[in-house]
View 1 (cartoon, rainbow, N blue to C red):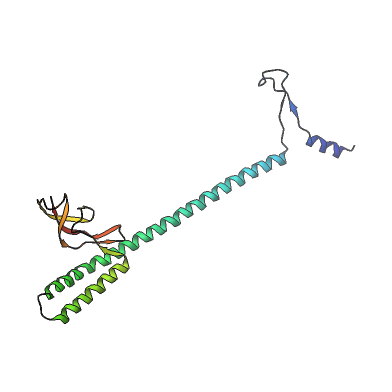
View 2: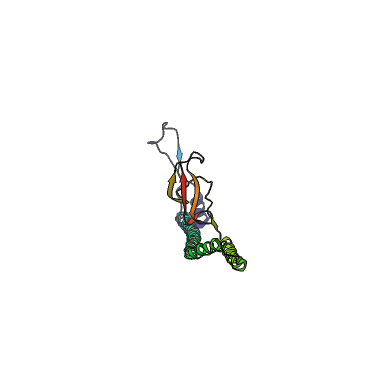
Amino acid sequence: MSQVETDKDKDKEEIKIDDMNEAENPEDEVTKTVKKPEEAAVDVKDEEIKGLKNQIQRLAAEFDNYKKRTVKEKERIYSASIADAVACFLPVLDNVERALIASEKSDDQCIREGIQLIQRQMHDILSNLGVEPIETVGKTFNPGLHEAVMHIEDDAYGENEIVEEFQKGYIYRDELVIRHSVVKVAN
């Protein structure tokens, strides 16, 4: 055999070491493998690859969370913008409704029909935006939706029942109150 072949055979062999300190029986033999420098370098590179892979996975997860947070933030800003714009138009709608009530006393049917048309259009626009009026009369008082300005004692009504609405309230997509309903509560 040549010297090169002998060196290769030695590299492939495992080196057995008696580890008498750790063994309970002196006859037990523990086999340890001494790694070649090339194998050690491969192990180091494998650890580096695992670390980089872990880092990439964390960055991907952080980016995904960032995208989700951004979408939620945009939705929140959009909802707040809609609520602010609608809040500016609610006094106009209130005046249209007052004009409709006042036109009932008038004999001019054309004016009444015109005001009803304006009112219907405004309600349609609000509905398309996801804004709905808050139900009040006959419902139980909810401080998250209603603002009580009067309280009466009357056995004809249930506990915390709303008996009269002074100003209509509106809610956006059943989650964001634009304006609380101003009401009278019984009992």
